[in-house]
Image (cartoon, rainbow, N blue to C red; front, side, top):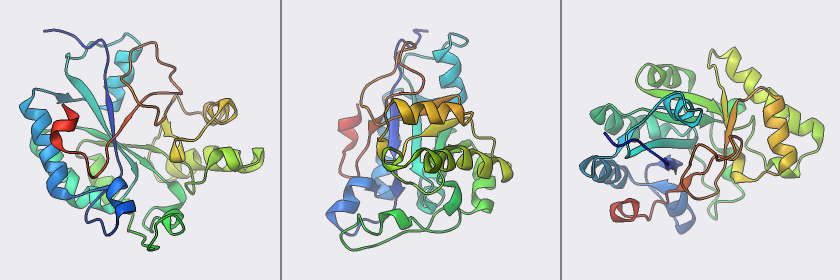
Length: 232
């Protein structure tokens, strides 16, 4: 078996119905998500867990040549409703980054960004616990989905350390972090590390080799308009 020299991380957000062009960028329809997964499976790609991905980075594990990691930002309920059943068919794991202070609520941070002001449900604790038993691992995406680069040091600590503390209280042992909006500099990366996270995911595009900075892991942003052919 050929082993992976570089591994892509796919980044999805909401899975469900999009109601305007802004939403079509960050929301993929259930049918299209299923098509994406089917195309990857038929091309012999194999999803791996975030822990196996990290072990590969550290040289502790080999993974197949077409290994990839599936990630979801924000924690939308639509992932539970539409994506998780598809992933279970393939026995594929995935990682989700949660906004810890808004579990069971809605993506209120999007209200001013979405032209129509629409907001959508986020996973609740019961759904998270169920998914954790079925292939998903859960990690941190800040407390309130704020742009970390716009915060003072006290606020930055609250969004990073506070996120880890809240998820730990919910018995979600988060070890990894994804920067909200993908925005960060050295200060924010240092704060994430100081909060006790072991690695952080960016939105910088590209594949990951073992030498990629562990607090700047690259991801491929998958838009709702992307066809299956664009993934391969």
